[in-house]
Length: 247
Image: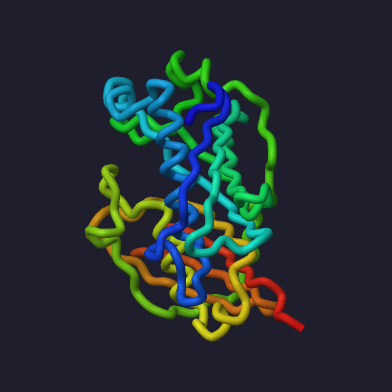
């Protein structure tokens, strides 16, 4: 349901398909829920597919960070609340909070977006007037989006396949989380859940294209990832942090 023009909330139960082998909701599943509640908010305000087609605009994610404070498990009843805010220069801020039924804040996502002209592919610094009414709050709940880097080595090739792409005909931003998690040793993920995931998006991966994935172990449960295309073109960088080992 819509709480107000400024925020929007939806409550859902975590499905089996959203959980991992430890019955914890995966980061990718959290990002897909965040994407859906944010899209539903925009649609409720009239910022739907027809609006973007009419204005020749689209929002692209530039950076995001996801922090877990408590596990979200299969069967949990969760409320996702999204809050967009005014642009700082040409960057739009949006936070998504995931709260358990008992009121515990389990996860917080801070994302930064740019509005682009779909004809020229250029970032718009002067958005359509219709957007100004809805994106007016000052930024709140900002997290550290820093990605620590390391000397990364190739660990495989990834492709923007049919099931990973969206209506923009490029790899949907939520699937980068799946790729990163799939290249951390599963025995480590079983013992230490993901505590933080930060991703910087540099260049989209068009449907059907491939890139090389590079990885560096930074120590203390931290991993750096780089998605690199032809000519060393950067598609994305990410840092994944595991929770401290149980004592």
